[in-house]
Length: 330
Image (tube, rainbow, N blue to C red; front, side):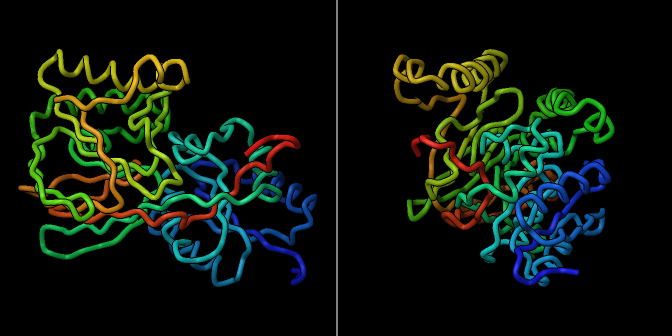
């Protein structure tokens, strides 16, 4: 029997990503220790990857939504929570776990993350929203927490073998990347940042990021910040083998290693765009493509887009993060 005087959490879980008996036992123990009421459980499915069951949980006036799944489950749950003043806690359970990585969570500390869900603090972060126009003129709107991409990025997602991904994790993306690089297609874009004048570009990859770190210490967008009210725009057009090598060195070495330290940033100085890699920031981005292009949101394919409008809703999402240790400065 529930106790109306105690807060209640709901766990939205992907059954293919978690060991349910172990998860139930751990959540029950931490909820009880924190003085919470009995947790409600909602299972995702192929037909409902998270939005529907999250809506059911919210109808029951839960005080916290805990997500146990991969990036796709997190995105779907956040989409349903959008506009509701309910915090979200993450139990990383997928291949990428990119939002958790960018929040600098310990992906291996399952018990600690469950404890944090019930006793941590709330941090407000930006939320990305995108309205996709399809070839038939119809439009659909979605949230994203990490990034959305077209070109090589989206083709890589489309070419990823899901069976290999389940067995080998992020290594499956390497095979998909090699396949995608062989595609000579480019994106021809007419775009606009905020209220600036429209521009044109031809690129190999277009990525809009709310945050910038990926697996394997790869930092696509070194200046991306979950709390700055801006999205980071990344466009690449490497030319030949030399261009690809320079692009990879800049992303893997300069962004991923050198810029992580204060001394490294001082040594390199400000980031400079070049013909292979170009960065910009904006609160709103609109674009139209010369032909429908594959698009991905937070690592899942979302069909093809003829045009899009994306924007950032500043500090629109509450996520549960660790309580600072005594004496720690904020």
